[in-house]
Length: 291
Image: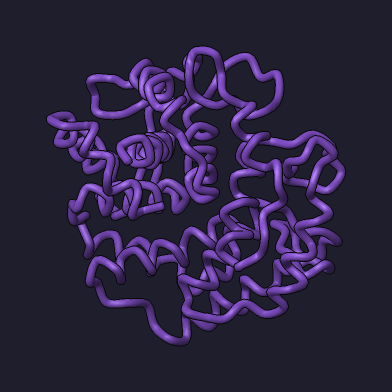
């Protein structure tokens, strides 16, 4: 994803500097990146760091490292923020910063394992019977960031079968019977990463989520497209080697409607906020559309 996001400046052109400035302004003095209320949050910190890395801008490394170190081995963090802590350290290390200690990495890995579900997937709630697509996606990435081989990889792949929906897509949770764009895109990317086959027809389902005015919708029948669904769908379709030339211009037009002169993008037409998360998804989408 980061490799593709790095291609976004091809389409941003002179606006690249404005985007970089927005990202830098969203880093608080404590080293964390702002959530929508302005407070430092590990979730947004990951998107801030990845966005700067995509634009080849070095963040305030010392303060960022101190911010990550303040969480120790993630003992008190929930699942999502634990995965964000792990990714934050991996991103800093990729930028040349000194990594976290071996003991803290072991602590993070052990805590990550507590979120393993009975079916060998992952779930934000420890002890759950079934994993979720989103948790599986984050956990596999976290294992890779920690440089550790995933245990029971085959069973995790098998657990994804329970998350398939009758319409040929994926839902995030087992009881849901209607596919979602982001869950399906995450499933495609995860299965490809694990070397497992993606069922025939998945690409067709994703392509059917295109809105008449460009962009992708989150669910069948959703009234408007959004930036997250657009970025993840494009990423999944590219991984499936789908020809995107027929939707390129409409997707670019949609993304252009979300742009602001502050150097960021709204998440959708009804969104009045700006943050580093949706900016990163814009970079990912533009990267794919620049190919």
